[in-house]
Image 1 (cartoon, rainbow, N blue to C red):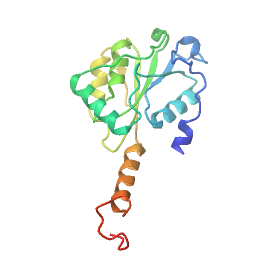
Image 2: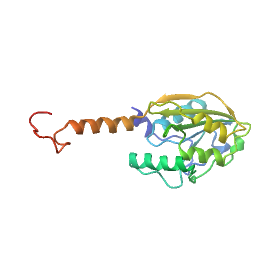
Image 3: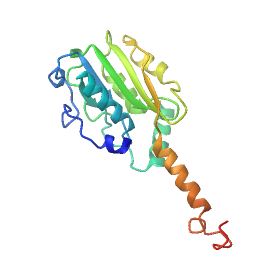
Image 4: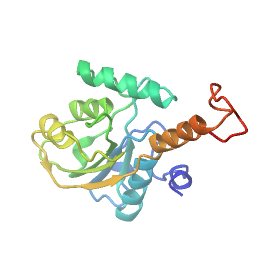
Amino acid sequence: MMAALASLPLTGMAANGDAGPAGNPRGSGLLVAYFSRTGNTRVIAGLIHRQLGTGLFEIQPAAPYPDDYLQTVEQARQERDAGYEPALRSHVADIRGYDTVFLGFPIWGTTTPPVIRSFLSTHDLSGKTLVPFVTHGGYGLGDSRSVIARLAPGARLLDGFVMEADQERRTMENVTDWLRRSPLGNPRSPNPQSGE
């Protein structure tokens, strides 16, 4: 169901990802800015956007992360360890037009993804209310709250929404486990007939 919801288009989002006050249908001063790799965080962003009539901005790196999950994990680890903040594909056109920013992202390596650090470093959120919504694979928020507080020191940081939703990692683990037990997936299996 999450995958089906993630594939639905989010109305009100400009094609290039730029959002400005004009993209805020009710002029509410609310913006949903999010990064999503697999679609879990996108689903939550869409729900907030539709229910509150917010502006919408998808945070994307200028150079996309690899499609391969393990390659992305390794790249994100290297970026985290180096303190690297990747360039963004686009920026919110006029962040000043928003009073409240809902900031959505998955937890990567017990912290915020590098692209979220880039977003926070390149958008002045001083005087704004910042509400995180976070998906994770079972490890909780990690140090993400302190990262947000450090990179958006002038924002009023509220407690947000947190949900475990890491199906990609679990799917990989389940398939790997299944293949490990399968005679076809384990070429070292001595007797395919035995089921061991």
